[in-house]
Image 1 (cartoon, rainbow over the protein chains, first blue to last red):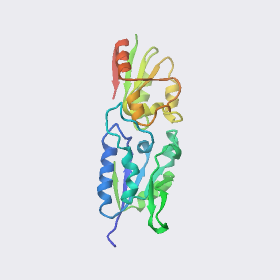
Image 2 (spheres, helix red, strand yellow):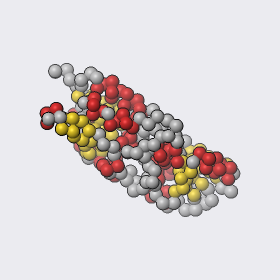
Image 3 (tube, chains in turn brown, orange):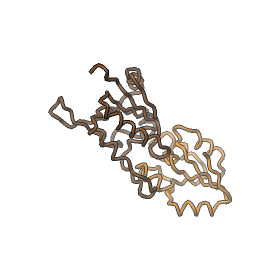
Image 4 (cartoon, each protein chain N blue to C red):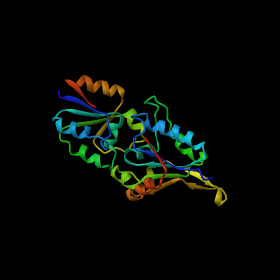
Length: 135
Length: 100
């Protein structure tokens, strides 16, 4: 289809302090229903959204972390995480959630959606996108 | 008795913690709440700011630490307190300044 656009959702905020992270997830899920080429970017404090092991019981708010791991079921296959942002915060890929999708071109093999990219690569990903939505 | 300072912003997107620490005096308590707890994450650039704070007691609110997946991942010297502990700190200090 010729009218498929490349959408990039840019996430730069931590998960709980504001509503941005949750709103981003909602919009991503809505957007996924329109069969566009969707990619997610996590940089700056946005990388905190993917740090595994949330326990929101004491805080008394909803734990929406499982929604991230379900994104693969909505055919979201590209989750770019900026390496420099992780490193500044003392984080590595091991600290992140597992996010996977099933690759239809490879006998539905389960593959990781997370791609650690450099700041320079992230800039290029932004340049290559048709539409950028920021959260 | 000292003052209680609360910091609720991420040190990576805001200079709130930096400003708080440069105004805090010996005997004061800094309580990290909400996104402020990210400052105490082991290995992060902001953790160095906390370790170099002299004579200031650093605490972090447990509900906010756990919600962000940071349980057991904070630098040494940071005391994790629950909501009751927050109230105790307010009681033990002369006044509270919320660094927003």
